[in-house]
Image 1: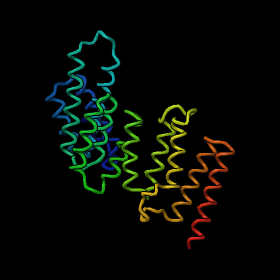
Image 2 (image 1 turned 90 degrees about the horizontal axis):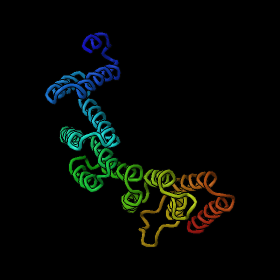
Image 3 (image 1 turned 45 degrees about the horizontal axis):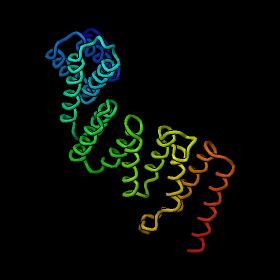
Image 4 (image 1 turned 30 degrees about the horizontal axis):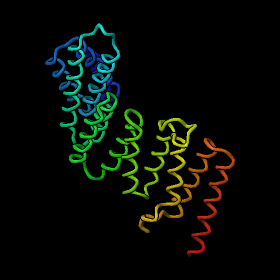
Length: 261
């Protein structure tokens, strides 16, 4: 590995990190805790430290997955050791780079993917105390998306609903929510499944609750984007009737805004 470093040009950061990753993999598999720590420190001096720590977290997460899927012959204590080591690495990484959202997101995914949702939700609260305010919306949105993918769609809905209620003009949040419902929301043949719930999100955005403040009204440009997204959704997942419904809603909106002006 050391000879390979000498042949890598300075600008080839990705390739250099890949070589260090190979060395870290060997240390993780065959070395001791001290030797791994030493290589992590060396790698951090030669590469982006955050990326080095995230690589090690990824490797340890794969070890946890492998231990969980291994045969019953593996001892319970060895599996516990693998989990403990990964837990320690993720915790160390979030403490070391607590202002970086990517390390928190990696930790969320690790916990949710291992059915540790209570710990993940507690970690989300901790992350918001450390991250700058401008990163909060993105972080909470990603957590809600991860709940859909790795945890519980119902918990994901609770998070994204609350986020949309606070930021009703954020179409990016709505569209991400719709996409997650389509992919992970459940049986698409039922109205309570992902497609039906995604459709309900569009209808709710077009006709917001009477409790909504007038300040939350979207601009004409936003409404145009919303109708276009809804229509494309119905073309792919609906039928002629549902497409006609979108056209009717768009026409009604234009008539309302025209008469109000």
